[in-house]
Image (cartoon, one colour):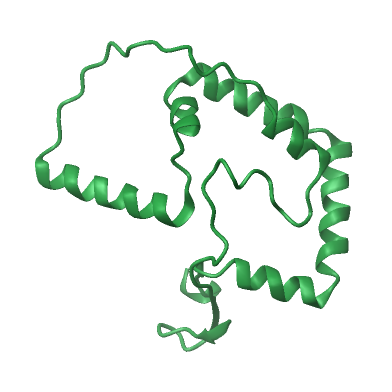
Length: 149
């Protein structure tokens, strides 16, 4: 909801953690204003068995830094479920990542697709009940006050 900013005493919006977070595999384009292009991206057939060992050798981090990174990633994964094996493989390989980005751009980058998404969002958010539900689902995000940025 709207609260008072501690820095400038102006109004700012605070959200808390989402109540309906799901792992990536289950959370496939469950947006209330889903468009047909979402299905094209979700059903994208990316060959995940292509593996190539990296030739780069990175200096290992200190145990303390490694532990902090590990804890941060585990915490983020618990909250968002973004680190499924499928997405790890896709993000690790530049070719697979480029394929996914290209598919998203191809499916959602057309003027017709953008117009459809815009119309659906306008229709969805014109209902006050939908705006309330969306604000509950967005809990956890902190939006800074404009004057404090």
